[in-house]
Every structure is written in structure tokens, then in C-alpha cells.
Image (cartoon, rainbow, N blue to C red; front, side):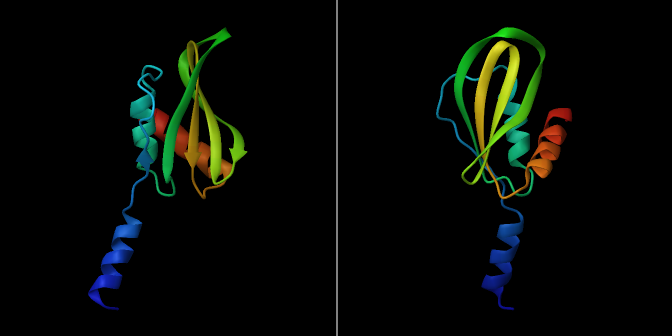
Length: 107
């Protein structure tokens, strides 16, 4: 194995996901969770989406997987009466992604 191949393998194993900042507003406390999620192996891109209001009240931050999309999953973040879509591109299964989200939320 030559140096360039070894360097490429090392870079691929240490690659972290990318957090896309395409909106100026986010749910309070969501960005640190998403940054920790990007550090997990297998997470390629995390994109926060549209913010909305809901009738129900969720006192603590929740991030749960909603539906599969092409190349990953859509998740829903909720806190208080605010909800925000989060798009996660990953080859992980839904169970593996839910585990990664749980780890990112506990830290």
C-alpha cells in the first residue's frame, strides 16, 4: 500500500458530516445537538429545514426520525410549541440513526 492510498483511507475513516446553515433561525439548543450528530460515523450531511408552530407543547427538546427520504431520513425537532424539519443524509439504517441521535442528545 503506497502513501497516497493509506492517506485516503485514513481521511475517509476520519471524515465527519457537514452541517448546512441555510436558514438564519433555528430552534434554541438544536445546533449543538446537530453538530454532535455530525461527528458520528456514517452521517454525511445534516440540514435544518422549515420552522413551524404546533398546538401541542413539548417542554424538552425532542429529535425523532420521521420518514425515509432519498439518501437518508427526515427528522422532526420539537421544543415548546416550535417544530423544525431536519434532513439527514446517511447510509445508516433507521435504528442506527436513532441510536446516533440518542447519543448526540445525551451529551
